[in-house]
Length: 419
Image (cartoon, rainbow, N blue to C red; front, side, top):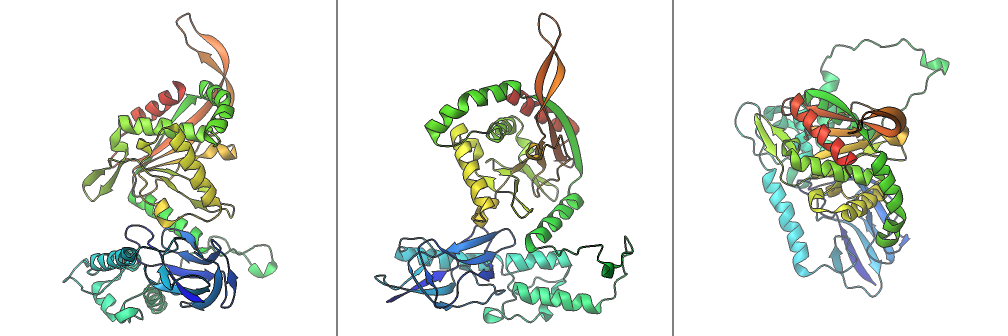
């Protein structure tokens, strides 16, 4: 028997820790390769860690609710025919430099998160992780208050649980005006059902409210004739499936049309940093994906500007499938520069989507409906039945004016109609 040490893997830039939300195994359980052994959560995404070997669970080194750092050993598996090793969940044994690289990365992130710039007063040298700093900023905790928080982490580090406990204690002793009751309901009558938000729903709620408070939202609409696009897709889908082994949908074609339009108007592919506009050179398309539990997640097609249609289809299908099965990695929902949401899946004609911060625009695609329309031609106008979709673009008016928003939306429409 040999001991296999399971480390918390690297999960993307700026993420140096994760919370153990649920162990899927117990000490003594037999596990197989790729069997999920634990669910973890960051402030970005929930994920699972699989076993890299066949064996038996020997130790679980963290309890549910605790927050290990990247590179820390979280579990030990006993396996036959394996050399004692640490693994970041690759099935093959890491090369010696791999462990060093993980440790180095954690150290670099620690150094980056080592100091905090308070709103007023001198710089603090208290170690705060990016997740803790986010909570500190959101709750308006001053530099002096941070110094009074008792850290329970390694070397007195302030963990997520420490700062949340402080916030809860502070709120309990701070008198706040009571919000008026929206409706006077007697819960004891049984006429209502109380549903507590799960962790992801809370994150979505906070992110949406923050976006509305941050960006000056404006929404523009345009109709796109998708008749020719649908005809092309219907004629190509069987041969595409045989050739590529992937299903071709209209969503893939909408992504392709959007990427072309972003290349025409690159300011749409930007974010805001105080009074600076940061224009992104690479295009990361976020695809809003509904989950079986009713929540929403936005996996990102990285470097979409470098992919042809086949590459877009393969990437979108893979991300959508793993999103529904809770198999996404944290880095796969990061790096988005523009988001697309397909409202037509639910037969919705149109909508006014909320911008996915820190982006400056989001495109919603409505349901495709047959309509009687006027068809203009060189030989005169005629009446015909065409398949029409309403496209709506919400954009941040701090960066995108109505003219730019309109030109971009028109470019997407033309790319769709001229496919």
